[in-house]
Structures are given as C-alpha cells and as structure tokens.
Amino acid sequence: MYSRFLKLALLFLFFFSIAKGESGGNFEEIFSARQNSIVRIKYLLQLEEDRVQLDGFGVAYDPSGVVMLPPGVINSNYNLKELKDFKVFVRGGDEEGYEAEYLGKSNFFEFSFLKLKKPLPENLFTPITKFRKSKAKMGEEVWGMIVLDNFSDARMPKFSKVSGSLFFPMEVVNCSEVVGFAGSPVFDMEGGFLGVVVGTYASPFVMQVLDGKDTTFRVLLHSEILRDKFVSALEIPEIVRKVPENPFDNPPAWLGIVGINSLKRDVAKLMGLEGKSAFVISGIVESSPAEKAGLKKGDIIFGMNGKEFLKGDSADAAQEKFMFELGKFAPGDKITVRVAGGSAKNFKDVEVELGKTPKGYRECETRYFKKLGFSIREYLLDDAIMRASPKLGVDAAVVRYVKPNSPASSALPSHLEVGDKVVEINSRKVSGYAEAEKILSELSENPAAKEIVLVVEGISETKIVKINLN
Image: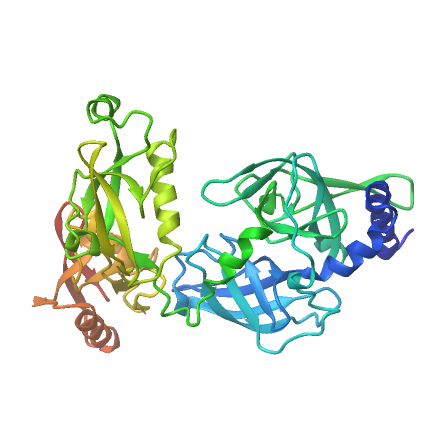
C-alpha cells in the first residue's frame, strides 16, 4: 500500500500538471516559493464555563512576523480579555506552533492582526510583501491555497478564473469558483500577488485521490471556509495602515447615527432627489458628534465631504458606502455631511468632528459568579438602543450569561435573562457596574448567604428574581 507521502506526491502531480500549461512549465517553482505565505492560527476563547479552541488561516504579511486574518476568523464581538494563547503554525515548523500576540483589528474592512513574538526565517514564514502586487483581470486564471489536514498541513493550489470585480465600497474580486481558504493569498500564474481570500460563499469541495489499489478515497476539505472572493492587493496598504498599536485602545471614528430609513420614492420626487442616492436618519444618540453638529432625526443625507452618493445606489448601499468612508477617518477628524433642505438644490454641508466609538462588547468589563450561575457585564450603548433610549453615560450592570441547571437558571418568580439590567440587589439600589460586581462578589463568597433577590429591568418589563443558593 502506498504511504501517505506517496499519496501526497500524487496530489502534487495532479495539480501541477494542470498548471504547467498556463505558467510555461515553472509553476512548481512559483508555488514552492509561496506556499509558506499562508499560515494556520489557533487560539482559545475563555468563556464562563468552557475553553473553546478556535482556528483559521491568515497571510504572512511582513518579515517582522505580522499575520493578516480575514474578517470572521476572530469574531468582532469576542471580549478581548477572553482571547488567549494565540499560536501560528507554519509548514515545516514546530508542531507545537509559535507564540503570537493579538494586535487587534483594523477599523477598515475588519481584518485582524497577529504578530509572532519571535520572527521566523523566510523559508518558514514567507511574507507577501516579498512579491510583486498585481491587479486581477477579467477572465484571468488565478490560484489560492487550501490546506489538507490529512497530509500534515500540506498546501495545495486551487485554481479559478476572475469573473468580475465589485468596486463598492472597495475592490473585491469575484471568481468563477472557489479559489482557496479564507485567509489564503491569491496569485496570478506568474506569481504576482493579487489579494487575500474573503467572502461569504461556501461550497463543499471533495478531492478524490488514487490509492495503491487503483481505487479512490475522498478528502473532504473545510467546506465552510472555502471562498470564491478576494480583496484586491491594491487595497491591502490602506487596510494595513489601520493596524492598531493597542487592541484595547483602538476606537474607530464615530458619528452617532443609530439607524436609517429608505427615502420614499414620492418624497424623493418632491424634493428633486430622483436619480440620487440618499437615506433618512431615523435616530441620533444623545450628546453624540452628530447631535452636537446639529444633525437630527429625519434629516436626509445624500453626500459626504462634498461628493454626492453614486446614482442608483439603494439607501442601504448609500449607508454602507457612508460607513465605509467613515472607517478611513480617526476620532478628532472633521467631515462634512450633505443634508437636503426643501430640495436637492437647497442643501447644506454640515461639519462634524468625529468622536471615539463608545465601548462595546470587545472592551467591556465582565465578571462570572460561578456559585450563583450567571455573569454580568457593563451596560453599553447597544443596550440603550435596544431600550429605545440611545444616550451615553449610563453606568449599570447587565446580565451576560445564565448557566443552565444553576441557581440563577431556576430563579423565581421571574426568570433571569441575558440582557436584564440589574437595578437592586437584596433591597440595595445599584449605582453602577462596579457596585453590582462588588455586592455580588461578596454574596458569592459568603457561605451564610441563602438567597439573592434581584430587581432587574428587561427590554419591556421590570422583574423580581429570587435566586435560591441552598
């Protein structure tokens, strides 16, 4: 019977035989020089009761050891303090992996970044900055990479063809079929760097390989991370420019608009906005940059920094473009927002000084009380928006998690639910998160405590929750 290494050799021969005609016979050299530009990453997510190992793939970016991870490899809602033990795995390297630190995410297109604690030699970690950047062309044959778990993390090329590009809000190239794993670099047949695989499309991909008995066995790849789109290499410098220095202190620029509505066709016609793209502000956060600049609910926005939104864009597309452009700015920068008056010709450009995005799930404080069976976190702007009261500066504790089959999950007469705002604990009014954490910690550590009575506010009702600790 053939060894697993001979099977691997057959795979290489299969793929390279396809590629030789396109690359003048030197594809093996091109591929060999680039196969260590995709790396596997693994990390732990420390939840209240569980430690979950997660993984994905990314691009070796530069010689200092920076790794680019596409959107979704590290969820934007994971709390930063719960992300542990990042490691990078490279072909031919230490099977235990190499320690890395999490740099955070770019505020431009949601890429995340790691950095190796000790740089690796180029033959193990081949940075894409080494290769010529190129622009994808319609109909061009391109290739990304897949990683076969069955074969000791062997890399294989995955060929596809460019079927088009979407230039809104940045250039994302579509392929005729899957081009590689999310996080794989994409190259042309001469080895020029074209971009990084991203996207939401997933397709099963089963490879059939001959074994020693002239039959086949099937290798089912990670179908959930195979993709048919990649961000153009020409966009990468702008993405990398936003690499944070500190993941805990990297707030994107913030305006303070909390919702939009589509502009009705008859209203657009009445105001002379036919053929223009616009949206209506449906909510403003109190004390936000938008409110301070004079923007208000009902304002019609149809441009930014002197430029009107593209003709034909839907309200959703106009908002996406608007928010994408905001991502290019930093807190403290000034922008202008074009607001329609009685007609399209009667407009005003409102100057807004952008602020820092308020603290979110990634940065908020959280604490789990194992004996009680629930955790709390800080009250966030999202909680205020859910309660139709979008304002800043509310200091409170909110239930983050309720453990099944715990004292908290058996509470009476009302259930304790995720999102409940803690108002009172054992008849003591709670003035903020820190006080709630202190009181609950004391009760959790007190062996004489038999019951905890909470007054909590849900989205639509106030409840009394009694937790029996016996």
